[in-house]
Image (cartoon, rainbow, N blue to C red; front, top):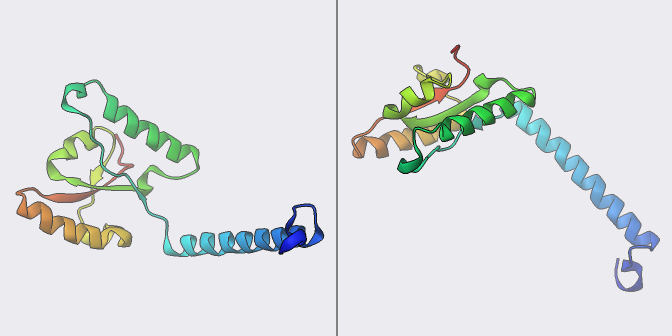
Length: 137
């Protein structure tokens, strides 16, 4: 609506807002459906604790709380993946993460990132691995 019809109390404005609300609702349904069909990826990004604060359980508590919230939302811990350096696996292992050994078990959404990351980490003398939460502790 333009001019005087653009005031919030006019029928034209109310009709335009209702049409916008319906478009947003339709879009949300479509996006939700697309996500369900594609499979949702839950990726834990980098966890870094400054060296002077390590050993106090800060990083572990952050990850554990994140996994608890993930479960509280009705999701499985096994849905959570991360890409990390091989040397950090023992730290994640204490929280129930395990290395995804088979290339076929790496989530499709991470395959490209994993391939590029492997090249870069190899150049740095490291090894990138995919890990998954949910292994029995």
